Image (cartoon, rainbow, N blue to C red; front, side, top):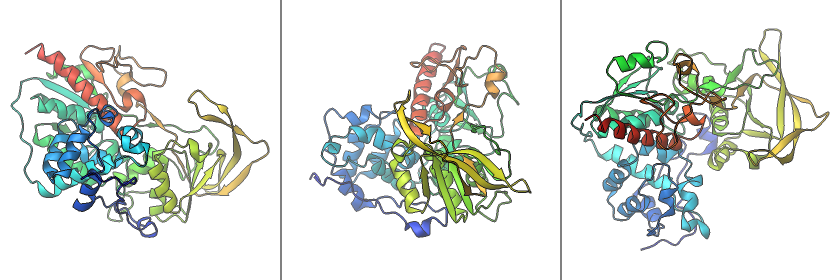
Length: 463
């Protein structure tokens, strides 16, 4: 029976004033009753626009129908045919701007909670299915994947299912890329990522950590080792700064470093010997999801006041509405239409104040957002002992600098054929943030899927 409620089934969350003091996951997820109730809001459209709006084309009506039928494992297996990381996507994918934005239920109310349902079936599988995926028979062809973030994991998983001998080379000591070092535990528990990676290992994916390709091995040396194709899923790990005075002071971080110390190196846990400034007054500069993650993490480290400093208004913030909502609930203070101009230090070289100017919105810029304009004479200072720059990242130039003929644009993003994901060099493919710059997990996964398809078409000719 259809559920014609205009609103999504509410997902339980931990109390804001308690959750902002630890790194436990904020959202509890649906139970069985909630999941079936929400699934019954889906009309099962014959021409589902939600599927075409998904970068990996998950068969959404089909898996939701299985939830209606109480066949939760079957629902999971349907998602798994096209999505290697359903438990991850169910938590961090911006469904509201993709699949859910095309849901017909959204015309007269809220869309079906597709992401919450995906998370439900993935979590159900993890709790109730102990059977490991079976490794397919090898086809004898070897492929190297550089980087173990969502794009690399997806490409590796899709190729391994087809029988390719895939090896992932990861620069850090743990696989998972941005899923491990960038997204906080309270949004994406690391045990979830580790379990998804274990499933890929079960189907034959090999993972070599502490392997900085471009330093330890070149791409040519990988070909010499018998790899017939290479996929570059190296992400965008080079942080941006403003170029203002004081960025070299003690207590100034890129969001990349700040979150890596917390998420990957467990700086919030006294059992780990990872240094991080434990600030009282924090300014996070930026308005994206990474800024929200950094601000909410700083609060959990014990900061008394955490400010989001953003030069446009809240309406222009690129962060997900859900992340902004959670940040406000957790007592993050929003200083919009504000832009830093100088970081001031004390006699010990530590951050002590942040000088800012007020902004107002002018005409729209090239992106369609109204450009911020400085209000003359509006300078003021804030008492701050830590500044976190969350201004976006660009690709690391290492592989590019040691690979002649590999082309990139002026921002350092690798150039590819968008239909095949092939780079300017034969048998070398790329995708994800290494091509687009910092973007979403699901878009990176979509690129990994497309590259896997192209690599398969290339190597099938050699069988």
